[in-house]
Image (cartoon, rainbow, N blue to C red; front, side):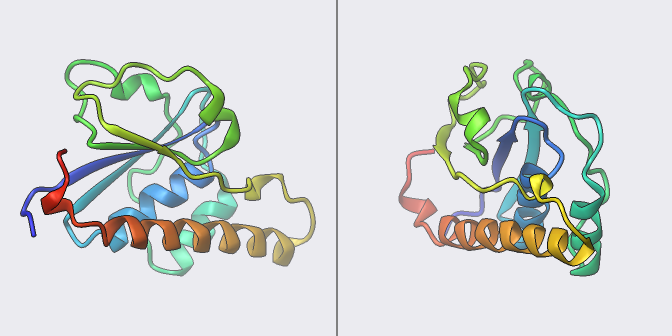
Length: 151
């Protein structure tokens, strides 16, 4: 097992829901071995309130979460990413910046819970489902033999 902390960037177009959920989940579940970040190609400028309510309700970190451009992570003084995951179909099809350090990349397609219209319960169910899918993928990702990977 390596003592290194791996930086992981989650990308989505708006950086208001899925990538925010993933950032918070990795920071909670990562046990100090991983540091999650999130960004968007066209950030909405605000985190979806339903995402924040869910994260706060289950005790996941929300401090510092904000909707931001992926350009923040492509500048020379930005944290160097080891992994970059797109979590929405729009971001997966876009041309991403060249990331310093040339991180490993992958796509985790997750349905956008912010597109669900309905009452509070229906919207919450969509956010819980998205978070559950993200948590499952994050747990599988964290179980990889990082001491054997060339990152």
